[in-house]
Image (tube, rainbow, N blue to C red; front, side, top):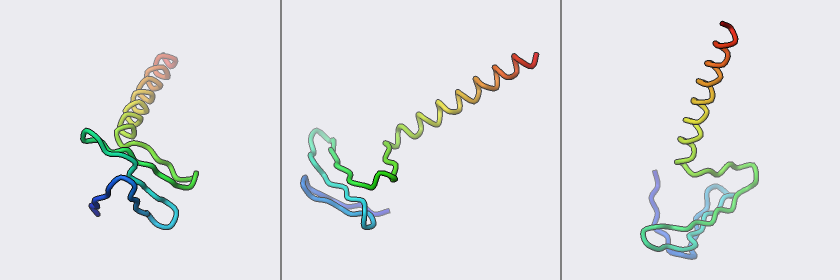
Length: 71
């Protein structure tokens, strides 16, 4: 893991195509600008967990429906 300090207006590069810029910091929060190719998915980590849980619930509901149809 790499840990960096950046000030507002400063950037970092990931590879040659992804640029992350600190736009603003306030009240313990950081606003970032991410410039990346359209084929790169960018999603907040907490949403990944939430989507995974929703997918599991959907699968459970589908299994319940399938089992009801088989009865």
